[in-house]
Length: 176
Image 1 (cartoon, one colour):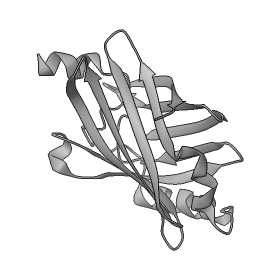
Image 2: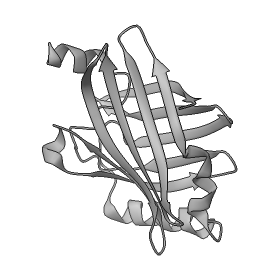
Image 3: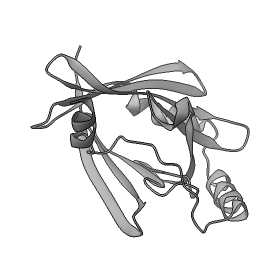
Image 4: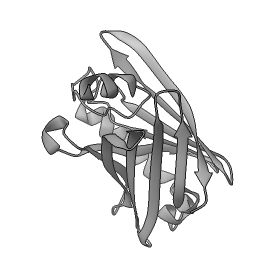
């Protein structure tokens, strides 16, 4: 039953199966430097809109994501999917600034050997933030678009079984 629920939740949060693709480490470094050239002085503060609680309701269950500010350079989040009262998926997230890059990490309970999957900010504008990990098959790109005070559009892109795959959904802010 648990496997079935996780399959149903293929809505977008299964960050497993780390596989390399044809991009090299040199390509990743080039993308990192391009992204950091345009970073604002206090770049993590530009993510203040992510703070709070968000939800996505579906026929299969409910996904909830909660973010809080840790300090000027870091936000922490937790995401989970539940059906009725049973939690069938859980992950911890961290959005943070290093000396010359901004990263977002995902750690999915019971998957990927308990290891963190890291994405690097490669592109941004006022309300669009693109994180990439070219060493993954799917998702290798996580895109967050701040739509308004109540909604964030999330797009996941990559390849699965040698086919391009795209998953898109919108999470909405909820009050406590």
